[in-house]
Length: 370
Image (cartoon, rainbow, N blue to C red):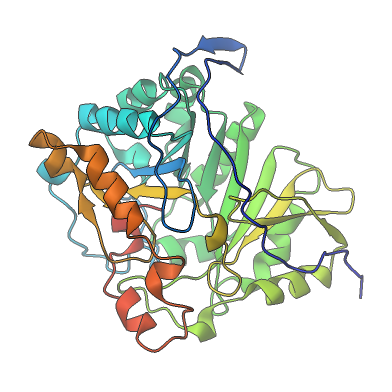
């Protein structure tokens, strides 16, 4: 068995840091974009554990063209009426408020964000903000938006892909978009985008494909794979027995590859590695067995304008109604994050008594935003 070089797993300490806003230019695909200066925020989004939140994830819709059961467990799921959703202007307004409060990165999610008819306008509008803009998608529609991405300064995309086998793809997604998905991933790579493939690993589904995904990183410098531990949400039939933990994933990969651990940052969700002579990287998002909550800097805004301070906390604050009524949205944001738990919505771990039952009362993943 090949031996791999992996540093003993340890959590990064959260360094004291001060965030500032500077005027800067972003060069992407040969197009220079100059952003207006935003004054250094006087109020940052912090919690009682000293964490500063600078990464906003905005869900554009709870609709999706796929039907993956760990995300959308029911074929006949009832989606939100359009009147409940944030409009393009409301998304831009709320995003601007968050930027004024120190947000430096925005990710668009769903559902499938590219299924929304006005997504091009939303991306263009957010591209004017002084932030790093990216999105998570299933890639089926990305070929229609390449120019939009480039003009808005989007340089990287996360692609949800749980298998490299066509029949298994149909089983997981209940749709026949395998070839289109792979073709569009190749298109993104050819166009110079950085691509992260997100694979939710489950024992009874796709665990034997882990090393096939690792192999993809050997000669593709702008391709990165992220293995995600299966997480509990409303209706997705989560169980410890189905989950493949961090340690097992490393052992599985180590039986076939030598690899090195890569240095990380305090806010990283993935612990990353590179195989010997590899061009790209692979990483593991170990939410269940080796969490990264100490460095959490993430903010979630659902498609209907609800603010979540943690993926697993069932508590929400209605920013959209407050915005429409002219209330002070910033005060609501600050108050919600002062109530944030240290980890996992207040549970010490996923095996704690009552934890599974509470997580299952949370929204489904598609209704939160991936």
